[in-house]
Image (tube, rainbow, N blue to C red; front, side):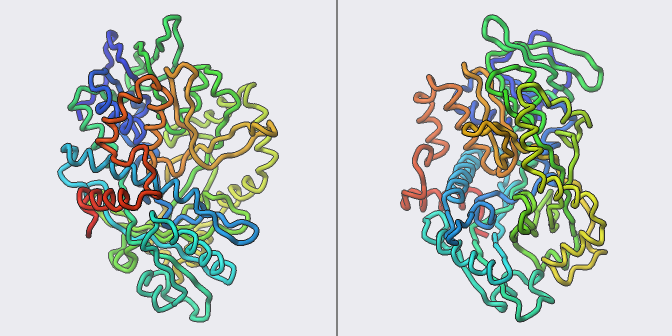
Length: 499
């Protein structure tokens, strides 16, 4: 990567991207398609890119397509499952796959296996209620073209073939049910981020490391003054730009607050830390060639959904089980213990206090998670993998997630949102992304939305260029089986997902 530490005083790029993660890398690549003549600068506060939430050990890396994640298919009071959110997320992931395929064809990487590999995605439940839910979920999803080929079983024998590690040692009379999709993938978003930033740096984008953006100030001519501090020398410089994207993960909220745009008022952040149990045992890896998601405990938040994932990171296979949630006031893994208190402002105090009152169950859950002993965490694993032995697993600290707190437009009360939120200034000169999952998997869709909202006067001229890279852009795949079949075949071949 053509990366630099020092920033020249004369740097006045057309676009400034704050943060060297998957979002900024994606937007940089999109801008190379629609506006290759624009000058772009990326400022990353760390010594490497993708060091926070985009890092492979800092996230589950599932490649969220809603094939296995049960929290995307809620059941109503009558037991019927609504597939709408799952369909939306799968559509967004198909957009990502098309864009990555375009980059591969353009020569971004020697082999797409450097960042994406095929891995079956499964859902697994126990008990009568779980089985009834899974039947309804399968019926709802199987009717959707995007979920064609989703298999269902209640057979212990079939599940022993699909999930030998999960089924070993399980009581034969236990009620179980599972679905399986062979269309799943494992994505190393850290590797993908590095590949994309390497690619754009060869095309003129300047990527600066160890450079923290301390403030954003709107000037009278409409440009943004960006104050950048060298985290090694302490030296400060200012650059001026006509467009800023704040894609700094948990660091986005404080910067958008410093920019003092009206659109950020009322927003707060609730930081959640996480941990995973990891096994590098070749024997265990050989017995679990899949990603499998279960159900969260009754009353537990979506972030607590247990899953056992096969991961391929830098050529090494491992299993991750979790997540085990926790609490830290830091907004970034390398952040400050004062991040949360500093983010409380007069304009979001009501939202923050409202969530504090309504989310007592979440607070209790997080406290319980923090106080868990290693043996208690191992017992949770054994609920998923009955034969698990403690010596085969070690603990990995994941990245920080800052969940969005916002005002409910109806009640005016603060609500905690488990998702992402794109904040766009009124004149379109600044935007930022808040929140977490499904995040990285839907980065391309999120950044396309940014282009549409920030550059409405240009998007019609850009549309043909975007459709060349993303054939389904503007055309929902779930309603067009012919286009869906073409997109699937093209992306599977280009991304080498046929096995």
